[in-house]
Image (cartoon, rainbow, N blue to C red; front, side):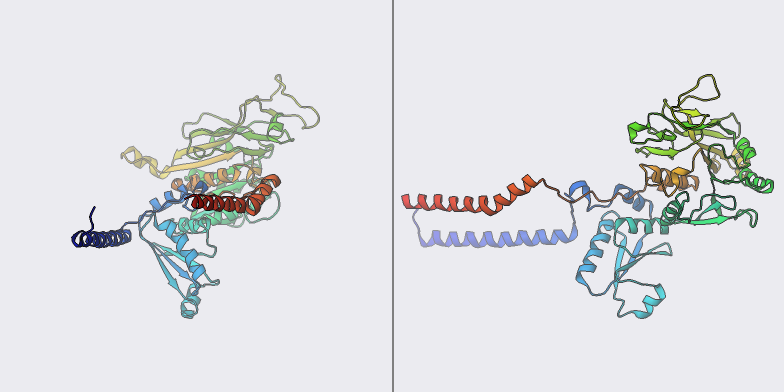
Length: 459
């Protein structure tokens, strides 16, 4: 091609046109990026994306959420807050974030009760919750609490040696009580000898009483059930605590003996009095459970026919379990010619019925009545401080309480912790990587340079 002034001009013009078009396209893409946002999380397990359960909660919240961050002009802290809240805004755009410098707004800080730098206040429907730790677990729990339309009062019976929902002893339920409070539930205790059952009780818990209740107290409990109250009864083998008439009212009975499974060694448990549950029915409480649950020294339940109640077993042992009536010493085995019962055995039952106040209304209307819900288990140890962390015990306990207090939408909400991000290498692997970085890589660069130099000399 012969270079002429005309061709030289055309080449220059082509270069300028290309540059202008290229810059224009880049500018157009930059402008479009302000209108449309796309984010992708390529980390293992998607640990930089909020969990499916948190997204489910956000979908339930139909109104805007306002988050106020009381943080000083610390770029690192504010960036951390923006990243955390931004992961929620991806799935709920009407979440707003406002920063307030506590040094310039001392009166507002005192009014709101701010105590640490970086504290968040989550506002929804006129309610507010404080978040002092920047994590998905804490923020989701705060959203869960403010999203509740009404406070849920979980009242524990006390005065008869029951497990204390605020206690720290091994047999108490202190850890479980704290989990309930973290989920926005109000945990209180009531002694029927001193006060009646509060009228705002969402759920009454009978947590393994060790001494008999007074006849008048049993009457109050039966009246509470008759009036449609929700109940969680954590029983124990051989300890009826004077509640036989309550069991009869609910259409259930307790089989004599303790549930045992002599093959629990397969799960690393040497004590045969631990009942193991590995499979669950398709019921609201247990539908999402996929972990084994453990019940130390449980009693088996028997469901009796009752026209008023609908009873569904939700916890059943393995086939190889049985009720042992004798002492748990030495070698034990199932005795077929006694009152011992072979497995599978029911150790947890969900009982439902239409509330008395709405049964009549349901007869004259197509609207279903409000459902009364009761769960009876043959063991209370599975929620104790000692065993709460075993396998799926905590999830099961929270599911029970959520279902009983009619918070079905929140049963599956669990914020899963991030996977282990620590890379552990064998000593040999570490040595290979070290030698490769110190010796192998420099040799490779030197060899590449030598090859290039030789090729150039041959030209």
